[in-house]
Length: 433
Ligand code: AMP
Ligand code: GLY
Image (cartoon, rainbow, N blue to C red; front, side, top):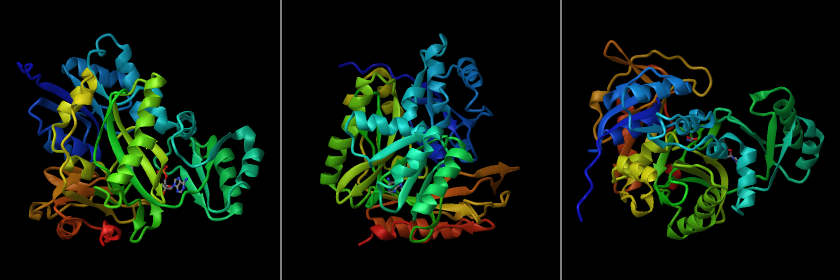
């Protein structure tokens, strides 16, 4: 058979965190990528391509750039532009229709953008999830009564996007009623909490799985476990993620098979049946309750810092996989995944996720060996790297066993330095025998 001519692509990646540095790092290694732009990017993505000062939520500006620079493929890192309809805009504009676009339509993005939509979707397709009901502002009395169906703790979720902060777990009925009131009536999460989902508390082990889909078939990517709380041993405030491990040692072949049969396949089938335009990543946040998987949430993107452990284990060409999503050949493109363990430790600015200072010089990166650094809140000022966010650098290591990946990441986490540096000391510890 004659191989088709390779098509060298100009690619625009949207986003500017550690996840995007990992995606950009991978894309830039593809022989299919002729030119990579990142909007807005950070000091890490600048090492992989050209950063461009575009607002990801400004559809016309993004579309205009794509036309003027002959971009062939757009890859969206974060959820917000998707929820706001960037994919729909590209599908509706004559000059943008031909562009390969990785990220779902706004309807598909509602799987993340509206918890009530996601729960109803799971109900329609018999996908295991916590029992729930959604309530709007006029249903506050019913909502209060509904709490009585559960025993503590109570789980309250703002329906809309709330920057990862919209879930409140309340230890007592009193606290739950008060939180409900603040969410519905005092705009605790702004408009996002004008509808609230109340659901059953699931006790188990959390993990995540990821797929790339064209809305009909899918390919499984590596699983991951993330560490959301700021403090060691899962204490303190929730963050975007303080570290991650891939694969998840407690999700063996039997568990993974259950996850595919009970959750992934019915989700893809639901998307297909409902004719939702979906080309991109799906992130399944799961709770394993006595080995049975339940969906805690869907996200319509890769996770951060999960991407920083998933991407390094992906041996196949990511650009080729994304191209397959757009030309309908994904089902024949099973990715190769490294059997090695990846572990990442997130270095953060002291104080994060509450108030923190930024603008501090980052030193020691040239002394790092055996780890890959993915920059999150890092910018370059006159050639000097300085902190520019709460999560600063993800230190990722790959090794044949988890313990080695952990010790290499921690050795390098000590070498990279900036004023106020903080990181969890126990990433992966719970997973070691
Ligand atoms: P989310 O923002 O949906 O990822 O939720 C934040 C965190 O709240 C999750 O990572 C879980 O630890 C926890 N959580 C959410 N829903 C439930 C539930 N139904 N039962 C127990 N924990 C939950
Ligand atoms: N680390 C969790 C997320 O990206 O949503």
